[in-house]
Image (cartoon, rainbow, N blue to C red; front, top):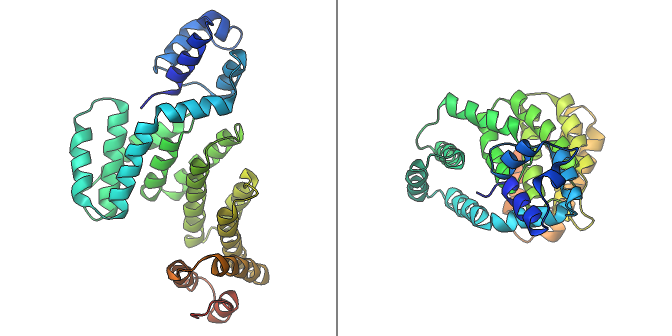
Length: 295
């Protein structure tokens, strides 16, 4: 996986800017050199200043970073396809392949594959490996598609408190730079979704609502109807569990009504029905799904 420092090096050299010129009054030359060689992480605020110094927009940097790492992203998608289809054989083949590597990325891939296999009822993963992963997440300054995806798989293996702390850190760093990829936002939403539902399951409705509000503050594209609809469902469930039942039912009904209008496959709505019946009364369930023909 190509590091952000390598991308910055490529851009800086392409503009014939020296290390001294790029880092002046921002970071030291030795530090910048280490960053470019992938030997040191950098804060996002410093990276933004460096990009401004060499006259590169954050959106341009982000695009180039993901283009250079397209092969890694494609590998992630291949793993996801094997995982979603429950293809344990393919996942084990990937695991044996990545075991041969000795760098940090190889170790992260090994841990990710072990988590996938454990979720599918195969193999095991150690506490030391989960700790290594949490320490890695805590040090990340620039969350890319890969790290977001990795965190998504790691969340079920972490305690809710640690996961919540990381999501808060992640939110602050993402808010520094709003022009990240739509698929990255989908994963961020997925992380919030899982965390909020875990908090609801443990009865921590106050913190669940805090994360609902944080999610809303991340903002949605004007045409992003899917995430808006899912957001209504999360907000509605949490409000319902906070005894704001009338508001909760109205939001849940809005989410289901939109889904009924745009979806032809009832499978998703059936799953929603089975999930929500764990949390709301039969009477309120009928109100939420009143426009679904299969009720």
